[in-house]
Image 1 (cartoon, rainbow, N blue to C red):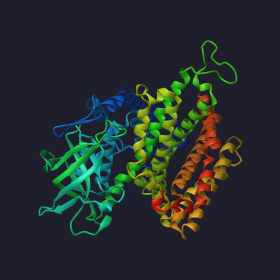
Image 2: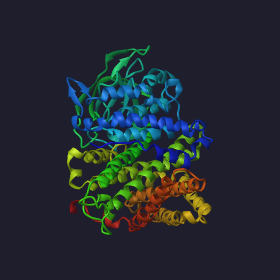
Image 3: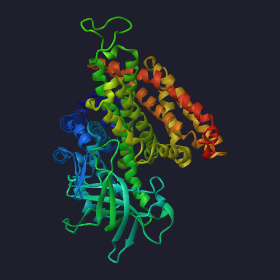
Amino acid sequence: MPTYTAPVKDLQFVLHDMLNVSSSDIPGYNELEADFTSAVLEEAGKLTGEVLSPLNVVGDHEGCRLENGVVYTPTGFKDAFEQVKEGGWTGLDMPEEYGGQNMPVVLGTAVGEMFSASNQAFTMYQGLTHGAAAAILAHGTDEQKNKWLPKMVSCEWTGTMNLTEPHCGTDLGLMRTKAEPQDNGTYKISGQKIFISAGDHDMADNIVHLVLAKVPGGPEGIKGVSLFIVPKFLVDDEGNIGARNGVTVGSIEEKMGIHGNSTCVLNYDDAEGYLIGDLNKGMRAMFTMMNEARLGVGMQGLAQAEVAYQNALAYAKDRLQGRAVTGVENPDGLADPLIVHPDIRRSLMDQKSFVEGARAFILWGATMLDESHRKGDKDADGLISLLTPVIKGFLTDEGYDMTVKAQQVYGGHGYIEEWGMSQFTRDARIAMIYEGANGVQALDLVGRKLAADGGKHVMAFFELVKTFCKENGEDEVLKDFVGPLKQASKDLQAAGMYFMQAGMKNPNDALSGSNDFMHLFGHVCLGLMWAQMAKAANAALASGAEDKDFYKTKLTTGRYYMARRLPATGLHLARIQSGGDTVMALAADQF
């Protein structure tokens, strides 16, 4: 059975050597001393490694079941959820006034990686709740916040987001769910929602659904969508649970992966709901939850790649197959371990360099969220808005690919369920689809985010890269990082210029290259992260750090990324500049 060990040391390296969080002027960061973050991460590591990870395969094999209208989670999930709640992990970065610990998002993100890597299906129950609570926190009235948030922060009550319907997913303007206004200010919600993660289960006393619906007489399409709080059980003014609301589970979806999460069809039949935010402005409120969720989903891509890599590495060191081409390396055995072979090394280095670069990217993104929320920094908000589709799309595409590489290390055993590697691949697959399919993320990046605020934020990104290269260009240790990063950044700028020139004349020329642009951008981001990590590792070695091997390994891994992975930007640029003619050439009936 696969195992998981929390990468505490590497998380600490990113937080303190690279990001230097405790010296930041972001409010609350002065509390993030290395001893404190180490204690938090070590404790989370024990919980995820000892409690949640062993349940991952249980959830995969058992799944959830629906009996007499009640959804039951896999064996052990309920007890584990109680441990998570008792430890206060569900409210780590939520406001103290609602029972949270008010820790910065960056620390919550570091802990979140561990939870997702150890058991993604389980972690989604609290993850969806966190997103729903964030939407209420941002758009709810004081009365709504006081009524719903304390028990959602503690996960006594969990939450969901209800967008998709059988006939509409991305195009939410087509939704049919109705919200009929009542004389007492409530609404009667009727309709059907599908693909609702954590839609019903036996681990919480109540479930607070956030539901998109249309009020009759409103504007057509997406402009007529509003957001409503619709609880599973009604709650009185004192917070006591009352009668069952008009929402029931139609079925549990049978899925490729995340079997331990109850993905439900929910039927609403005159369910009582309460408007959150402004009428006909539901998407604005829902996007608060979805943007947070997209960063979390990007982290899922990293997390599944991490746990798959850990197991592939262990297997490669243990499994004896063939002899090294340069001579016997295991003379006491009948064969050498897999890890001696160059192609296995290539695969493992692809995985290792992606995982460590992606971790830095995610945590850097989290600092921007903290800067935006805690300092009101609009530039940070603009930059993380630009990078959100890159984090979600690129990291989940690449993360899935890395789980396949990890599975491949096992050969035939990787395809056999007994070894558990297929679960990481199957679980990672959904991250490319939900919270906005990756093709839509790429379209959003090229169609909206690049030009936002007159292109101010993408220009700020280019300036970050340029400044780093200028300041470190004479450093002999960093020459293997600065040169490739410069070239990759030039490729990204050339792609942007192509969109400006060709895309204005023919939008298909730009949109046909959107997926390549998202990946090109992602590689440049990871290149920047590796350059910054190399600088931090070099500084640690120069200052006489004790664990020299850790920092030397970091530099070697970074050089691999810059030499073997980052040059993919040239391929993506060539595809982009080929335009949209070949993409759009066939008529529909010629396919």
